[in-house]
Image 1 (cartoon, one colour):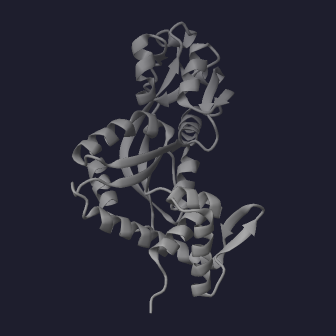
Image 2 (image 1 turned 90 degrees about the horizontal axis):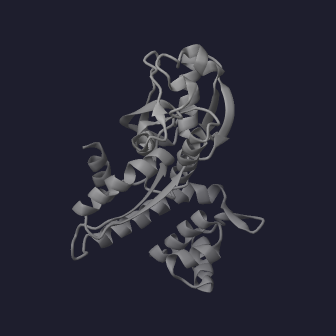
Image 3 (image 1 turned 120 degrees about the vertical axis):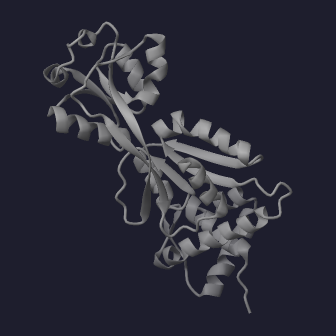
Length: 292
């Protein structure tokens, strides 16, 4: 006789994601006492503890980690089953995470077009750096990740999405903005403003620049493209940023792109999926939409 309920599994998954029963209960609309009882009953039925207490936080132990992927899949299959009988039959719930360039400049428009095809859909978007997105995918906290940096984790499938062009930018009155001034030697001597470590853009830019220019001089690192553009506008240094992020500042005349035909400044965007995660119809539809 099957005694385990979907509600117990939902409490287990939410507790694993939130690190506490109190936060898990709030996330799934239960009282703390009801959630604690459901988790205790679930562990009793399985005959094992699923969490270790680390300070005030609950962390999955070996048995909990062994169960987690299957539990997430069961909850997602249940949600998918419910969606089959919605009146519109088309709306979906998706959780996405994206590194900053993609999350700020590409996905908002893409999500808008996707929701036109799937009216009423609820899509959450968490924007961080590449490392943050990978952690969200590995913890099953999002359905799909989008990154601009490399991902070599064995538990993650990285699918090529599209190419992206970068450009070196400076103030319009910078000496490097004069025709023919942006030589490799001049760029090596310039002060560079780059993204913070852990950013996919930082890793790619460093690799591209150092492989083609040699060592460069770091003047500052900052936590986002907008902050970097302001620092370049203030004359602190030059930077290498996605053309997508530079478009508005170029049009306003605040920045210029330097002419560097001797440099190859392209990178790849990737879609990340956990290899053990069940791919719902909603996830498959989103992937097909992105790749169309």
